[in-house]
Image 1 (tube, rainbow, N blue to C red):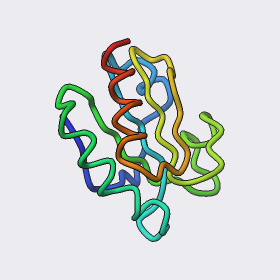
Image 2: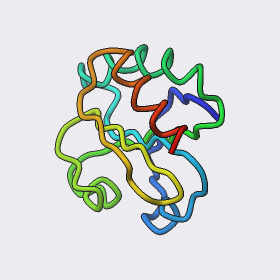
Image 3: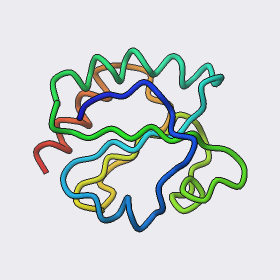
Image 4: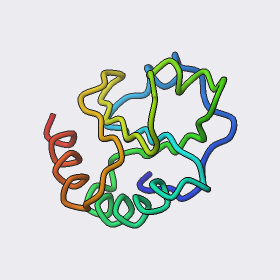
Length: 109
């Protein structure tokens, strides 16, 4: 499962996310956010080279428990997680190269 374009409104529980095996990009944001919109093409292109990396796109906002559990403050926030452990976090990435480099580190971890 690679890049997904739709935000999940009903986010999974934190325990379920922590239990996911393998590499995962957990993205927090909203459709109307201009920073999130800018990052979508960059993320989609960067993820093409990593089809084994799972991508979960979570709609965030006030009172959203999953985002609060990860202390999300700005959108988009990309958490690079492997076997339930956060390895890296990109906040408002602006280049495909920045995302691709983080994905390479995640895939090599």
